[in-house]
Structures are given as C-alpha cells and as structure tokens.
Length: 100
Length: 322
Length: 108
Image: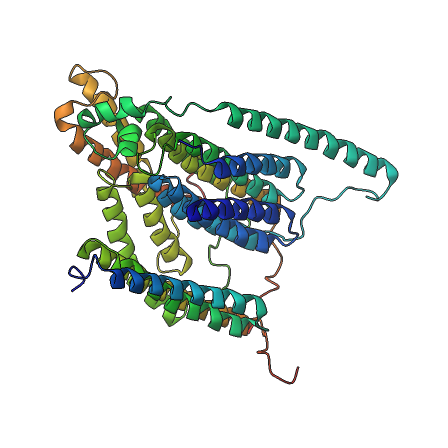
C-alpha cells in the first residue's frame, strides 16, 4: 500500500505556509486565513495517514478527529473574526455602493 | 496512472492556492480564493475516501467560513493595516523586521523539516484501530463507522465539541454589539429574484439537512453536515431580511442553542441511572439514542453557526438583558 | 432502456463523450472568465459553462448510475446549481450596475 505521497507533501507544505502566514502576515484577516490553511494542512496529513487503499475502507478514527477539528476550527475562526470586527472599525461609507 | 496525475495536480493546486491567498495584497481576492481552496479540499477528501469530511468541508469549511470572512470583510475598514509609528524605511526598523522575519522563517522551516521526517518514517499503515472499530461496529448501533466513532466510541469528544461551540457563541456575543450589526451590508431591499430563490430553497434545504442527518447512520453524513446545511438556510433568510436576526434575548432562542448539549448530557447521565457507566448506551436502544442525540445536535449546530454569522446582538438602546 | 444498455461499449462511450463535452464547456467558461473585457460578458461565459457544462457532466454520470434514486439526486443537484448560479449572476450584474460599471463597447 502506497501512502498517497502527493497529499502528504501538500499537507506538510500547507502547514508550513499557514504557520509562516500566521507569524509573518500583518493584516488580521490574513492571519485568520493562514490559521485555517494551517488547520487544513494538519487535517490533510491526518487523513493521509488514515488512508489504506482504493478498495478497502480507511481508518475511521482519524476521520472522526478531523471532523471534530473542522467544527472547532470554524468556531475558533468565528470568534477570531468577531474579535477582529471589534478591533478594526468599519468603513465610514460603503464606497463601492454609491447611493442610486 | 491517470488518477495519480490527477492527485498530483490537485495537490499542486492546493499548495498554489494557499500561496496565492497568503501573498495577494487584495483581501477580497484572498477570501474568494479561500472559498475555492475549501472546495478543492473537498475534492481531495473524496480522493482520500473521506466522504464525511468532504461533506463537512464543503458545507462548513468552504461555505460557512467563506460567508463569515466575506461578512467580516464587508464590515471592517479595508486598509486598516497597523503601520509603524515612524518612518518604516528607517534602517533600524528594516533591520528589526529582517531579524524578526528571519527568526520566524527559520522556525517555520524547522517545523517543515520535522514534518518531512515524520512522513518518511510513517511506513506502517497496518497500525491503527480500524479493525477494532469494525469488530465493535454491530454493537455500536449505526453502520457508518465515522458516525459510530463520533457518537458512540468517542462520544466524550463530541460532547466537549458541543461545549466548545457554545463557548464560541457566548464569547463572540459577550463582546457586545458589532460596530455595524446589520447583517445586510446594503440598505436596499432584496429583489424579487432573490426572494424567489429563498422561497424555493428554504424547504429544499430543510429536506436535504434532514436527509443527511438520517442517512448519516449508514452512509456518509451526520449531524454536523446536516447542521451546517441548515445554518445555510438560516443565513440566507437572515441576509435577505425574511427572518429577523436572532437576538438571543427570548428564552426559546437560548433553549434552541442549548438543546444539543443538554440532550447529550441528559442521555449520557441518564444511562447512569440505569446502572451503566457515563455515556454507555444500552445496546438495545443504541440506534434510537444516537439518532435522538444527533437530531438535537443538528438543531443546535444550525442555530450556533447562524448566531456566529450574525456576530452579536443589535446595537439597540434597550440592552438591559445581558 | 438504461438498464438494457448498461454493459455496452456504446453506453460507456456516450457517457464519456458527455463528460468530456461538459469539461470542454467548463474550460471555455474559464477562458471566458480570463479573457473577456468586462464583468457582464464574464458573467455570461460563466453561467453558460455552469448550466450546460454541469448538465452534460450530470448526464454522463446519470448514464453510469446504478439506480433511479441516484439519477434523481443528480437531477436535483443540477436543478439546484442552475437556480443558484442564475440568481448569483443576476445579483452580481445588479451590483455592477449599481457600481456604475459601464459595459464594454467595441470602440474602446
């Protein structure tokens, strides 16, 4: 059984990119997106380790962990976005939509 | 061989998208690319035989997170990048920035190297608890192994996950009203086409959510995916103004929020009254209990995600009830 | 009739043809997205690709389906995608009008 090496490497690169993005980005929205990319990389790595072969079903425990992880990630993202909204005040007027 | 090429291209696309998201200077473009990234991840999950995760990623990762990001982007000042107080091109600042970026970059590379070592060393895929799960599956009450793991074998994790969702809502809403808490970014009323779409989609979404919940016992699906799909209906209704955004003041709204966690706790503590352990379902009624818990979870997750999207109470003067 | 032809070579060939045609429509839509001069023509290219391309792919998948329930679900997917893409095309065009984006004309 061959480990799907393409996805494993992609997962590792996503983790590294996400971590770099979180540490080095300036805008907070980009930090939050980088955090999500980091999470997606971790999930990709986990599911790759759970993969068996195209015919036999995969290991379900990492799948359950990743499912839990996705839900927790979205709630953390929502909380972070709420904090960001309070940190950075809104635009004065919606410039893209001039009054008709 | 063709599929191997497809996997390679998909992995390349994922990495390229991630790079583009982090490198582009236009945040709107970054958010749109992030939604595309989520959808490509869903395809990758399907390739890795993780269909439950593919459903969840498409609904939650691409759909809801994308909506959250767009909503936040619309509500905050675009150019609000914290800039240094004095001249950013001064040599002191440049040197400090190079040092900081260098150290952080080095840390990141060390993490990357460690990960590559791990990938090289994982050569024993026969490890893992899949066989154990398959043996106990018939006693679990459901035939979808992921649902069995989530709701039966590792039910404690799911219980705490519901608590985490609740904490997120309480945390986001205790910050007070959002600077502009009107969920509709433009003041114009929705047109007839959009209202027609909402009228068409709402019952279909409800049906699809209930189907995903029901099918989750034997096929890919389950409470989380169903709850996310249902929350999409809620977001659609709130954004077009058909439904007033939840204020979490009335008791029934708070009750809906809590129903998942409370049902889960009631079942897990209730079985102790029958002499069993915490969260040890009696095997005879295990399927019904799991379905009951999952239904309550679906409702709670939908309301929670909708409240997370709305983001906070309205900035009305009568905020006496905290 | 679908059941009768399920094993034939013609059946597989027709299904493959549908899938490839759908993919070509999506490719054309992407080229349109990248090359067309303004938002309105890009929307036109995208929704054309979305409706027809997806319809052809769904047809190809339906020909390979095992039961009527799966065909029903595939049709539902196509209808929902149709409705959603039409509405979002309309909304984007409306927003572009409100932002006073002028349609591209040949003289520019």
